[in-house]
Each structure stands twice: as structure tokens, then as C-alpha cells.
Image (cartoon, rainbow, N blue to C red; front, side, top):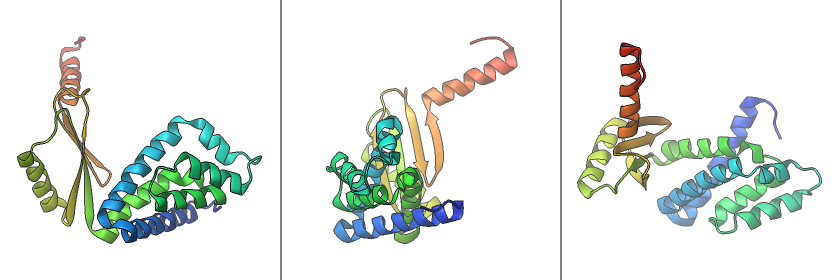
Length: 191
């Protein structure tokens, strides 16, 4: 387990590369996108379940027990992802999970020339808007564009997009919050 941040990043990239290659070989872009979605869920799960992180750092567990734990907890995930997660657990690299996810996302762009746009709206996109987003993203980013759509009832309207680490928040909630801040600054009062 490396301690130098450059070595840690290089190791994360190796994990990500192996995972990307395995997913692509197993099922092409569909498998890569499935692994991406599952990796996002696992990172979120890991952040909200300290018991898992504690178990991965607990020296009372053997290498085999840590690996088996991960394989059992994430048994519903794609096999290539479970395999890589198991190796991470065995080698004591579980704390690099978020870094590996970031490297995986970057390698989707670098190796596959695919730009993934996460789009969140209050209602489902229609085909026309979906195509407009894809066309604009293709003109800006190039390569193949894949939209990952999600619905969030908490936004009043508008759209939130994330692509390659950049976020565009054109949701009504954010616009209202920004307007409220401007009014507070200019009026000096509360809204």
C-alpha cells in the first residue's frame, strides 16, 4: 500500500484501467456504464456505512475475510467490479475507492472517447430535449455522448448537468437561491 500521493494516484489508475478493460471485454459500453453506476452507489454506500470502512481497516480480519466480506456485500454487482473490489480489500486499498472511481470516470473519456453527462431534472426528458443536450455536448466535448438521466422531485424545475467534473446547475431552486442572495446584498434585508 503506497503512501506517496503520486504512487497512490498511479495505483488508482491501474485499478481503474483494469476495471474498465474487464468491463468493456465483458459487455462493451453497456457493461462499462453499469460498472460506473454501481461504483457510484458503492462509494455512496461506503460513505454512509462506517462499519464497512472500519472492517476494511480492522487488523482482526484476515486478508481473506476482508475480501470475502466485500464479495458478499456487493455480490449483486457486475462480476468484474466485485473482483476488483475484492483485490482492493485484500491489498488494504479500500480507502482509495473514491479515487479509483474518479480515475475510472476519466478513463471512460480518455480510453473510450465517451463523455458521460449526468442529467437531473424534475420530469423525464423528452426525445427532443435529450437530442438537444447530446448535440450541444458533442459540439463542446466531442466524442460519443452518453446521457445518464435521473429524476429529482426536490428540484422545482430546470436542469442540473454534470460532465467530466464540471457542474451546470440551472435548476429553479438554485436560481431562486441566487436571486435571494442578490436581493439580500442590494436591499440589506432578509427575504
